[in-house]
Length: 430
Image 1 (cartoon, rainbow, N blue to C red):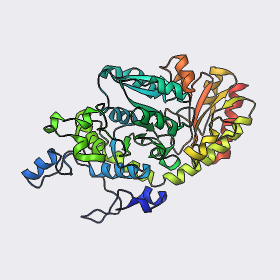
Image 2: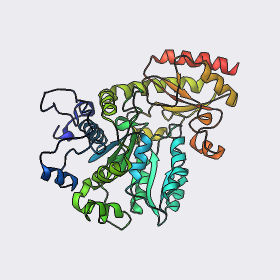
Image 3: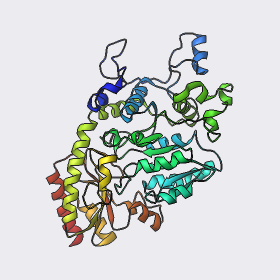
């Protein structure tokens, strides 16, 4: 599709980035299961390796199936381009890679998926990077955390596990004030519910494993660039603004303009880190995205009904779903997530840790798995699994207390989901 601006979301989720195969006329995007591509000539090969011409060299860098997926996600997010990789965690490292260096830091929300807290709080220290975790509801705290070594702000649009909705625009203003990019993980919301770029975000990351694929079959990640950040405005981002020795002194931002970040992600990030998405995974995700809007509407509809029932149940202490009028984040739905508050939230069970364990073990329809965003309804006790490595204070900040379970509401019959929870709550609290 040559011009995505005139098409609606439902059309773009099916057609963006895809064209009939030029040789066979195949309507569905083929799985290009190949590692390498034949060059037209020695000069053609040299031009590709010098970044003087765009094309396919080796599937660690680029693959036609994966390229369609990157373009589709970027189009749905309203970005200028994207890069796909092997997982959501890979996407986070890939997103930071052009920005960071030894001694530098990222200011991050403390309301994040537990694996991200561990990745930022521990693993990236091995690169000489660090993260400062802050309460993004306290804007003064966020602003004060930024120092001369900060290179990005990071948050989730709908935070995992609590389902909290972030004030992206407020964080974007702080990032702009300091000349920094704002990176938003939009996994839990998807571009159907939230468009972080419209609220000032610079970069978007996704675990495509979740709602974008929607069927629990493959892992994947994506980074989308808004194309609006000036990487040469100061000397904070030399990987993009200064000569790159590996390409004979080429300056990515000077050469590629708004596409600089995307080209760097492929030509340096994927080349050297190798966090590559395989074409079959891209194919499954493309199929999933074709029904994204239909699924997300049903996810939200079911979540609203289940959360409302849970809130009224005397065996439940509290529910964090932002779609409930009682939620402190309810007022943000209209501006940040106008099509709904997603389908991810937690609820606290009376009886504490032991009751949560009994609840999880007593469910039949809900699957006890470490995943979210599936068509199936999923549940997990975060404190003993996904957030187990965190300290009690970190668990509390993330909304993963010992008496709390996280649910990802699927697209089944909501009355069946409520009946399943009802029976399990009886077993857990009797």
